[in-house]
Image (cartoon, rainbow, N blue to C red; front, side):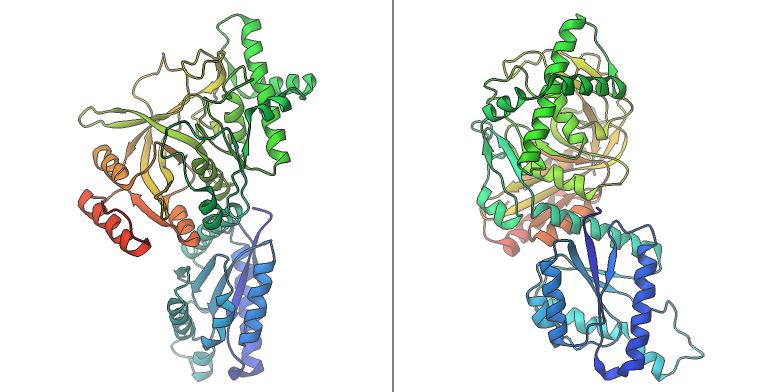
Amino acid sequence: MDTLNIWFLTGSQDLYGDDALHQVTEHIQKMVATLNESGSLPLPLVEKPVQKSSGQILATIRQAEADPSCGGIVCWMHTFSPAKMWIAGLSVLTKPFLHLHTQFNEQIPFSTMDMDFMNLNQSAHGDREFGYITARMNLRRTVIAGHWSHKETQERIGRWMRSAAAVAESRNLVVVRFGDNMRDVAVTDGDKVEAMITFGWSVPYFGIGDLVDMMGSIPTGDVSALIEEYRSSYTLREGMDEAFFLGQVTEQARIELALEKFLTQQNAKAFSTNFQDLHGMKQLPGLAVQRLMGKGYGFAGEGDWKIAALVRILKRMGEGLEGGTSFMEDYTYNLEPGNMLDLGAHMLEVCPSVAKGRPSLEVHPLGIGDREDPARLVFDGSAGPALCASIIDLGHRFRMVISEVETVDSPHSFDQLPVARVLWKPLPDLITASEAWILSGGGHHTAYSTALDATYLTTFAEMMGIEAVTIGDGTSINQFRNELRWNEAYWGRGSLV
């Protein structure tokens, strides 16, 4: 988060005179300093001079647009700021935009209040004028109301900032594809040109041979050093011929080093692989992928570049928060009445950032991909609130589908399942959540996060101009069907569910 900041723009006008505008500046300085020191904001606010004219506002917003370190703007009207002054500037704004509806004073000074005080402190007046023009211009924006000194307001601003940081990440994201999507699978495919237009994602293709060549250039000493890191980070469950175990782990170390070097050269922060395209590989990447996700890279299997991008975006959004984010797949259900659960996993690739306790490094056969036994990390997921999210291509637009879940400790051990796995209760219940997910077209791959809630993602979707639907407490199938139908009317024509 140390590469971005947010500009704080305050509206007023020359009508009030220099003395009043001097007080406005003093108020801004105190507010920005307090907010930056609150500990609730992941990005610093940068104070900008009081905005008093159309030309000044246009110049300021053009500067914000041109500055790569500016992740968005916060606008607040200290006094009355005639909204026509904002039209030219807001017309060129493409970065995330928060309208903060607050005022400098927390309370009305009933016994001492005079006309000078009321003229100076009229945010209730000015923000409504500003709100009208943003509505008239149909701008994508978030509105947060509340006093700037209140913890709840500060935390809401901080959450908005994380979504804004994800937008900045999205607009420069490179997702490397090693091979194409899995043959004949629909949901992992999609329009990469439209994804670049909508999200900013570049999704270049590379043959798996490019990675194999890179693996051949990795020094043996680097591989040995990485294996020592494995020994210090994980519990090694060998249970087999020691030389064989070490050989399989060594191969994954070489894959990890080559993958990270390749992604760095391509300035990529996400990637996908395909077990149907492994020419020249001895193992399907397992431990290597898990480790790279643990370092912050986005990933999805079977060529699912949309979910790989989403995993990276959620990791950026949740940077510094407790919990983690991983590539995930719904695998199988426990349909026992009163205890219905969803088991999430993948063949190998679940990120250790969502692990409960210390992962175990193991080598086991894999009945898919027709390659050698791969090394992988095995663990259970940590319990607590979480979400699963998917982005799907509907042909005429993208839709984000979010499912709120409660991750639980497994009531039984998985003695014969040598992969990382997570067990959760979908909200409001598995039956309703599954029906709603399927009605919405949500894919079988998701970005799973224990660090974020749905608000972060719906704010991101609003900033990017895409549809988002959330399945959680209070969801009913009739209401959800209607929401999908209403969304078709708003977002564009398509088949009605």
